Length: 111
Image (tube, rainbow, N blue to C red):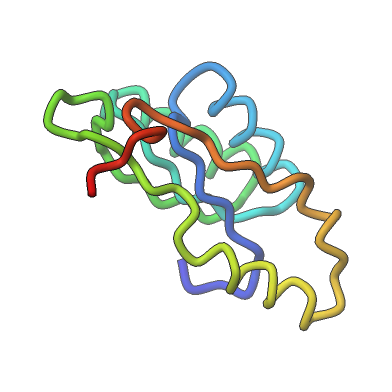
């Protein structure tokens, strides 16, 4: 996207709660990086958000529900995010609570 805007990564962005977050964040001016398993819906959602809100949107088709995906690490680099937020003077609360989203097998990761 290459802009100086804030960017949000949304997994499951083609429908439901993910689509609602994408729309609300785009309305607030966030560029978006959208991930979903339904390519047709993902492409439509990306195009609609670009047109409706004038934000940058990148899409990535990925089916994280496949049997060969054992678990997803969804908080890599979180420390850098918190550091960046506090260094630039923006209160972390601006971004809302940062909560990990657990997936299949995450409670017992492989050793």
